[in-house]
Length: 293
Image (cartoon, rainbow, N blue to C red; front, side, top):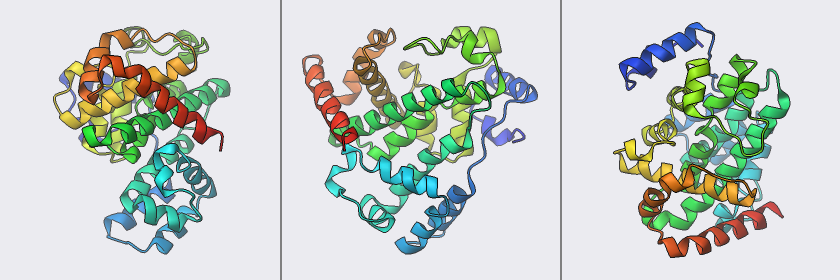
């Protein structure tokens, strides 16, 4: 995709110049799959017939199958079991289902060009963080007013700049040592080696895919919660950071970033420090219970 200058309007001068250089080097923003475009256009026109919307979704059997898998999450347990796509649309909601389809469609828009193992590991991590973020949102919805479908979008998209860079630079995985368990790109090292920032790239993908502004901002600043003034974006970053922390605990991996954001995350989510272990236990229990079914 050629660079769309409207995507750069909220970037600083230095960020804008850096992104333009990346586009010149061949970085491309993944296009939205046709089924997603058609679904979004129908929703924008006010189409509310679930039979019509379901027929659009099943045009891509992979998306339909993954949608059924996503709604088996414990975050949607009050609606389960689902008997059909029409039932999903009715129970979860039209716009909410549209958000889930957007999240699902991203993986098919960023296929592995090389290093398939690294791509598979990325999407496995992305899916786990997304599911945990949905559960955190569901658990804290009365405090935070962030809903599982929104958390799913943020969870899938928050690091989507990584596979974009993986596609463009064949040495990215090796140079960032992503084959090491628990390893994730260091922003300063990423910038030094590739003059790139996966957070800004992810933000541009979110803008191009027309994600809500607060989710785009959460993608951009998910490693910098103190930079965010928008309350909803800050809350979404807190949800993502807690989901990432829970994922690390579940995988028995260290999470060096956690201690630097812990206080802000717990304050934003209204969780007392002494209550955190119980919250994590509840979320992991629901996460593994859903996975078992």
